[in-house]
Length: 142
Image 1 (cartoon, helix red, strand yellow):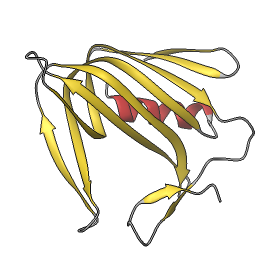
Image 2 (cartoon, one colour; image 1 turned 90 degrees about the vertical axis):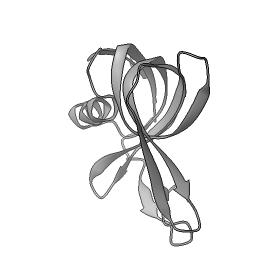
Image 3 (cartoon, helix red, strand yellow; image 1 turned 45 degrees about the vertical axis):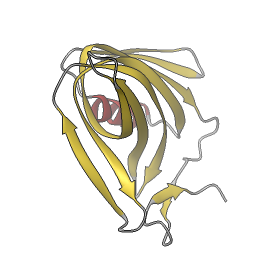
Image 4 (cartoon, helix red, strand yellow; image 1 turned 45 degrees about the horizontal axis):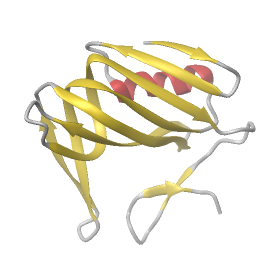
């Protein structure tokens, strides 16, 4: 992974074989980012996607082990219990141009993955807090 910082934003390039979520988590730790919004695109060799069932309050996970186009990544970076908490959703297409998407648990980069991180200003960290109604760790911005 390589990146540039322009004073407000990070421009990140991941190489084939790198893991998206773990690489970005390490960047957040190393640079002590207080929070950010992210977007990205590229290709994946494999991805683990989830669908959150509000009734059972559990994720349903599916591992897809094939080369895919990343047609879009969007999400944010916050902190939960002292650790970075990345919330990323992705849309993908296969070789037949069929599209699908979900919550990205992890993704192995194909040719490349290019990510834009727009930083939250200020030193106070954006945080997540458990929501008893949904069972999710939601942004704590009240």
